[in-house]
Image (cartoon, rainbow, N blue to C red; front, side):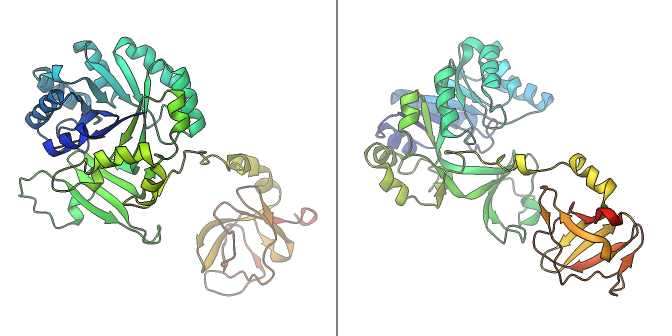
Length: 393
């Protein structure tokens, strides 16, 4: 099993030289990489030093660009010495095609972590980029079973994140600096790190980063599958990425990489228990994000209830406080039979429920389009229909 990691210093390079099964290092220039902090000159220097140490430097170009910016960048790197790099990692299909066209000798590692999760799409990229494509960087949202299948069926090598941050949200906009005390006249490169919490997430702190290329929010737990690599190795997985950038110290972003690689080979379970951050592998055994789809009912399927015996619909819920109904017709509350949730589940209305009008008065009947308020009850959710008894409707 071969590893790779990001580097930003000579000290990182030296640790990589001593790391078992690690020959490939990833270099991120500020111009091209979303989390890049290095100048092109620094990247070129580190690439040269990596080659001297028998390591394989890979240039990271993972930003997404409108055409005008892409043309400006292409003009700059056309005069850049790319021969030092063993490959270039790209996310933008336009950038991948430009590299294939202008530098056909340079191998491409295509980042397909967002979208492109089905085998047919991945095979399509293999055909489009043909001889230039050397590797696909796959999504952590693919469970182990699919990863094994893809490693066996795809005509190029595959890579997966073994350990590192899990990206929850990305925006190309600057979302942090205007809320923090940042001197707008400061010429330093923006690279802001903080945690963000909200009432909706129960004040759970999510690590958040802003660079010149946008804003990133991460899960507060690291992806970790380093103790579950045996089947993937057997299936032919080419690379496992060890992303330690969030554990950086004094400008070094591959801290302790030599010891980590050795522990992966010797005793990954111990490494797991000693990891610096809380860990999880949310999709590795199964991606259950679609597991409740079969239970969900569309509004079209509820239309029959709405048109035939629907009395009112829940339009808003204030948790632990109130439920707001909108009357679909005039009716007396003695006609009420039950509730049907958007999931299709039918429930009885609580016995102690009281309907009130906007003045807070308890009422026994209502008019068409009237707003009704009740005390909160479990499983109340917008879209739920209040059903009447068929013989009374």
